[in-house]
Amino acid sequence: MFVIRKAEERDQSAILSAAKDVGVFTAAEVACVDELLDIFLHQPDNHDYTFIVCSDEHDRLLGFACYGPTPLTEGTYDLYWLCVSKSAQGKGAGAALLEQVEKELSTWSARMLIAETSSTPSYDPARSFYEHHGFLRCACIRDFYRLGDDLIIYAKYFTNQGSTS
Image 1 (cartoon, rainbow, N blue to C red):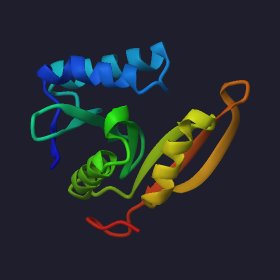
Image 2: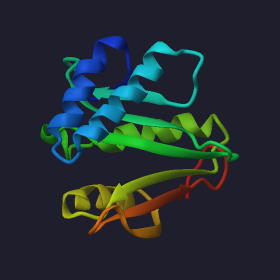
Image 3: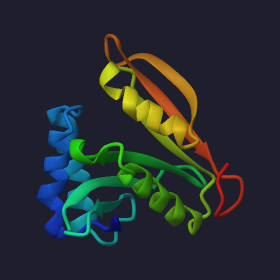
């Protein structure tokens, strides 16, 4: 059983631990998670980022997601982070987080959700996850992050408010 809820101050260390322990994010990327989480937790009037967490019935954090509106667009949102702890991967926590993100976005008149990821082998599971959940691979920018590490951009289009294609 999963519990999905907005992140709270008490989740901060567990979120950062999950981001570190998953083994794919650089120190700079974990620092970015920390920065965005700090904005979400301490600037309640800022609506650029929303963090949700997935926990088990014992309130152990299994993963988190961060998403928000894409600046200067109408109805486009970014999935900035979707992270599931290694021990919870493949058990539905990521799908539960994504489902909650989409449910929330359906109330915000979302047209699409964008997810960006790396082309490196360690991100194979992330790319498979997005494709399995209806995201379309829309672009590849070669050597974006560093030589040999391309940016892969996925989009999930919403056909009507509240439903996805």
